[in-house]
Length: 99
Length: 99
DNA sequence: CCAAGCCATAGCATTGATGCTATAACCGCC
DNA sequence: GGCGGTTATAGCATCAATGCTATGGCTTGG
Image (cartoon, rainbow over all chains, first blue to last red; front, side, top):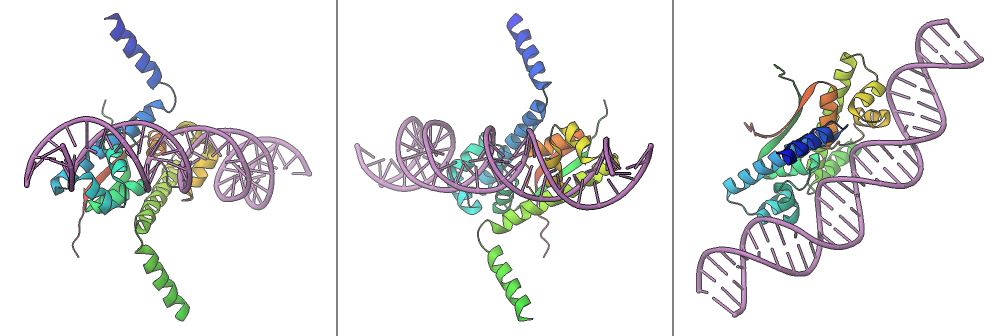
């Protein structure tokens, strides 16, 4: 009990530090994009090496990205998008803050 | 005449090199995002320094980005989005290839 | 004129992503 | 067992973005 409360407490405090929540969100976005890339790749029946070849990247970079190990640059995302016949779409969407 | 044809020729050849078109597109995306950030900032009546403060960045970084001088990281984009009350949206959209 | 504000830029240090190469573990097939 | 393919990771070099600090030019108001 007490351990869990403390962990949550620590996490909240950490998240309240400037830039941390944003970095976390960026990493989350990257993670989801990595998942999406994996999904699209597998749907094509491609291995990481094949995608790497198509995107002008290395297999290790693909593996790292798909596993959420890096927050990719826009250039890398664009390369992956093209290799997967997708269009990279980046925008500042209005916030749907309801609560 | 001849100069212009040569320039276009050179450009096409350059763009056909692996990774160049993608890097160009990433820079274009960054440029547009920079324009959008400027637009939102001015709509708020903020100076670059004020936005920098709100986003935990430096005025020089804002100026550089808005002018299209850099291709920003996702973390930076997220910070700007939050400061401007926007949601950063990054996705691999299906290609609307008609032609 | 001076001060303040604004934007743009230079130069340098730091950081994180990427590429490269190598390696390891696993699996399936012959 | 050996081979090929696949994925994951390590270690290092390189690169570009970012932060920092400083500066410059311009505009405006007192």
